[in-house]
Length: 32
Image 1 (tube, rainbow, N blue to C red):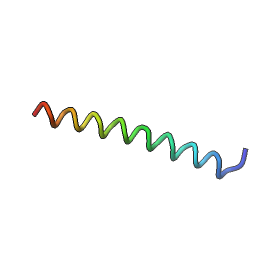
Image 2: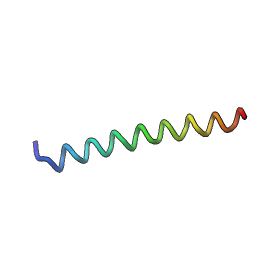
Image 3: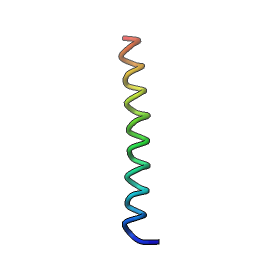
């Protein structure tokens, strides 16, 4: 496996986590 591929995977994982966090924040804002 090349380093670039690993880095891309990590970035994708981070983006997925960020998306989840953003959704959670949005739902919290709706309840406030």
